[in-house]
Length: 223
Image (tube, rainbow, N blue to C red; front, side):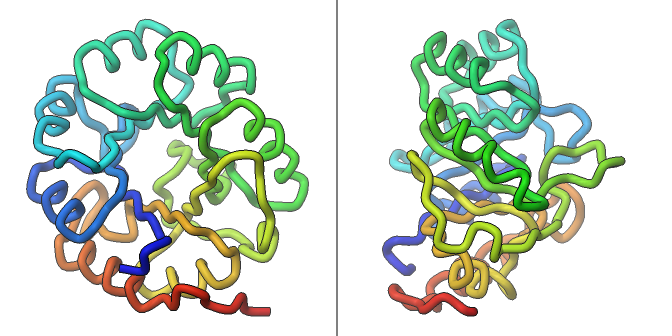
């Protein structure tokens, strides 16, 4: 594994996929608490799965516009390490969640054009990490996990006040180019390692990590 590329596999729903991701070198595993998603898990499922995650791998709860009651339940019944806000939460709400739960907060921001970039600056002042994702389609029901990429040149060489992670349509075939074009040191994917919506494929997970291992430590950015 290229030492400075950290990988997050999101939308995990079974022990086998968690074991594969952890064995391959995942730095983060994500559990999706969003009923419209084919990757959604219940509190009981997440609580049981979280216990199987090896020490050293961060457990991330993906939530969409959650109220305090929802977050109270997740944080009290599961052993998560980070909250990922993937909805239309305001910077003020991000700060409120950080303060209330005392956990690191990652804020997902959809990017489709240059006009979306100022949001990253705003959220970078209150979140612990940023997830730079492809903007969902206007008629889409999922805020992420749509298998869509965006124009990586929009964020090439950019930096924000906090660490950030690239998401959106990543897979074994394009992760090397994505890293080269953006300079990201962290990547996140879900559908890119699935054989069907919500079904993680161990061979695809391993192929993705193999592709990341082939990325040179100091890969030049493509023009």
